Length: 540
Image 1 (cartoon, rainbow, N blue to C red):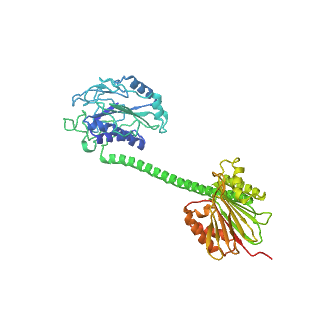
Image 2 (image 1 turned 30 degrees about the horizontal axis):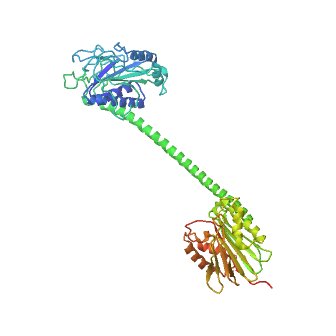
Image 3 (image 1 turned 60 degrees about the vertical axis):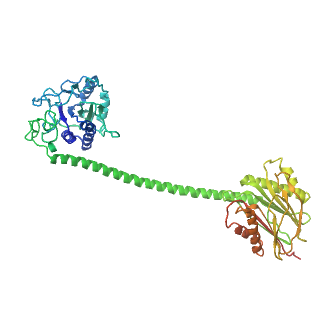
């Protein structure tokens, strides 16, 4: 067991560094030991206390006995891992301390007294914690320390180096937020590190020498200038190789630790570059997969829209050919992902030769509103073919459908046109008015008051009678055409201007051209329906 007392961190660091080098500790382990001892000793040294450093080299078989001694608190036996520390003694007393450890001797960091005690430490106590204060330590079991001893990959039978740091007062504690880079068994006045030794490491005696600056305690543990004997600088006492400690030795050991640290930094930097590259590749792959999924999803939405659109087109009435009338229609859903909606129309020729046109706008969007609009158009068609008066059809439709679908609400515009005379009849249930652009000039909205299907008191209040001359343009539509900018009146003005501008185009182009003009700015998205009727010369 070797003990030395230190009053300055540089000397303590140098002693621990030489201790690690002499026992062939891995450079990284040695550096961790130096920093851990310095971290705990700093508080005590700043408080004016000297700290005692003890070292003992043990075989693996001695580990359980050393642990048992520490656990039982029976320190003081010569050669034990804990050892003893006594009170102040005469500075000139010769020391013949034991030399069973591997710790520097005569290097200016202290000396070992003949009775195994460290001189210059105030207060007497046992290294195992049997001081007057009753300090009791809890140490891990030998099995646990054996497991820790093999954590660096060295064989369990390679032995270990027990390094103990003691303070004369309970002041050993790392600064707030700091941690020990090498784990230790720590109590307020002692800390012990069990450092595994590489297999086959021979017993090493460290040569004596002078520490840099000569600022450590003398052989009696006192500060320099307190009557301590001069530090030896000559040959060793027979336990070393006779070399002296100089700055070159310290620099060499520090350079070794720096090289290991830089190698570790380079390794971590390489790992970071590799991981960054792998992460970039992973992100690139995920992004590509995300793009593929988006494209796939868009394809599915488009295909789904096409299917629904084809289904809705199949439900819409086919074009009709009427001598003396040209008819065309344009429909656009509110969104491409929901190509069906509640804007619907129906046209057919009655037995008397007149043409019946129904325009419906059912509340809502999507398939449910499409079903509601179909129910209305089918009911209207049935009533019209049965010969019910045009004025009563809206109210009768409500009577038929309300019991079947209490939530149904729909606006309805009915038009009856005689292709021979051009007579026009209109019935309305809460729907936007029809627009007529005259060939002779001017345009007008044909207003008919009424309430739609599902509204209170449904039905058209009256029939409106008008006449279409050859070249006149009749436009029937839903509110999605005029309310795209949220101002119906402004929308009706723009609709009249657009219809007047396009009235001489082929009738098949007119509804789409009007819808394009009306939707240059869309503030309110809604289903859109535009239907155009224009009287034409009859065939002879």
